[in-house]
Amino acid sequence: MKAVQNGQVLEINQKIISSPTFRQVKGAYDLARFFYPEIMDELDHLRKDEPLNRVDAAEIYVRYDHRPFFAPTASYYDDTYAGHTYGMFEDVPSSYDRFDFVETAVKAGFMDGFKAIDEETEEEIELFDVEGHVTRDEFAKALFLFYDLVPQDVI
Image (cartoon, rainbow, N blue to C red; front, side, top):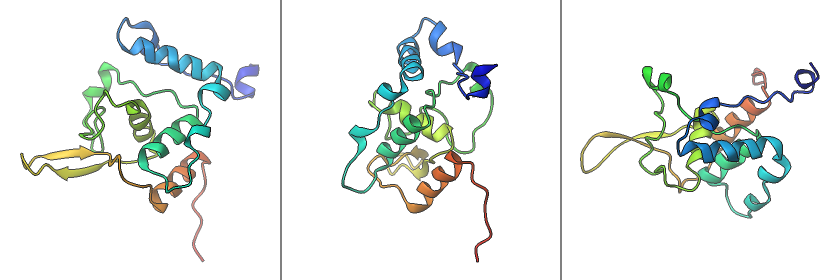
C-alpha cells in the first residue's frame, strides 16, 4: 500500500475519538494534528534564548514526532507501573494546559519523572519538575529514541 511505503499510516486510539467523554475534544485535536502537522505541530512559539525547561521539551518532543496524545484504556490500569502512572504527577494536574504533552512524552519514554517524599504526609509521590531544565543526558536519550540510534563503543 502506498501509505505504508510512504510512512503515512496513522494510528488513532479509537477510544479517544469514539467515546462520548471529555476526551473527544482531545481526539478532535489529535486528528487535526494528523491532517495538518505543519500548522498544528509547528514549533516556532517554543524558540527561546534561554535554557530548555522540561515542559517545553515535552511539548517539542511530542510535536516534533507528531505523536498522538496518550490516553489510557481500562487495560492500562491492569498492570503495575514501576515508573509512572498516568495522571499522578503532583506538579502536573489534569487541568494544566500542557498536561497531555507531559504525559505523552513520559509514556513515549522521551522523559522521566521523579519519585519524592511528600514532606507533610511522608508518602512517596511522583513529580515531573515543571520548573526544571533538561539535562544533557535527558536530551541525549530523546535524540537516541527519535533517530533510533545504535549505541557505539566510546573510544
